[in-house]
Image 1 (cartoon, rainbow, N blue to C red):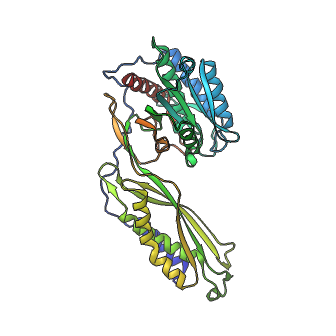
Image 2 (image 1 turned 45 degrees about the vertical axis):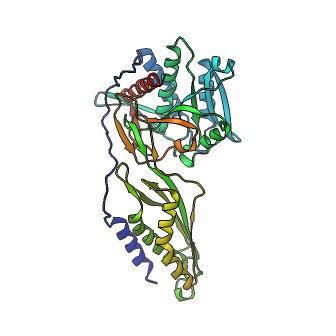
Length: 407
């Protein structure tokens, strides 16, 4: 085998080598004014806006990194209880609960809501405390989760409560806030099992979409590579088999295999990203073990298609590694999903497609699926995460419009 630096150079070349680009997902980044449609909804009053800003601040200030959501879930449970809702906590695992709330009148009739407003309570790490700062004459909220997705949680609560309070009847509407979205979606999956005998006619899913109704979002699938070789002193590399060398060669092959992944006119290319690599124990030891993890964003086709294409791309490396005394395996995740086509039949809202994944596929019993939020996914998961107060109001108003359309 060639030296490791050669393989690293090849890997960098494979990453940079241009692949024929198909239609890329469109995106509208400018915030549009509050929507005006045939299904009308009253905009938030000044008092309701202040309530929204205050709720958003309180939510963002509570650390809720995935797996550590107990405090924020308890806060939302108590907040909704004080508003007068019947609140259920749906256990995901010990100490971690989803929050599911709906009008007391529905509970009294023995009914569950038919429509959901939902988003997630967890964030990626590290926690960044809330801060208000003015920028170009506009007040912004900064901190972890301002965009992804505590803005959606706050706007969803305020908008749904305003809508319910405005009705003479009791709309069949509920609020669902889940944990674990950022790390595989165990919260939404637990709720889907909890509600396995129910069908929801519609769901409004909150994620940052830059003020657009999402026409679709990419699917998601993951895999790991594991290489095992033979350790030896680095002064005598011929006595060992470098697991890391074989791992890097496999990464090169898979990056080239990305070119064969399916694409679509709507969502553009499927993409492959190696995000984690671990190997070796010291610079002067031929590494006995090495592994890497990757995520695929699927624009078209099934997870089975993806698995077949990538297995075919890496199989020659697996065969050569075996001949050299190494063992190389590719293991795909037990679960994944293809591209999701969503509902956009609300007049007056702009449309766009999203490259990221969501919890939507984990709740298959929802018939009509709307994905909406303000703020940009480009600042989410970063120290630049921000959401303006205007965007918060725009989001709550838009949720009101979607609810008016549905009811």
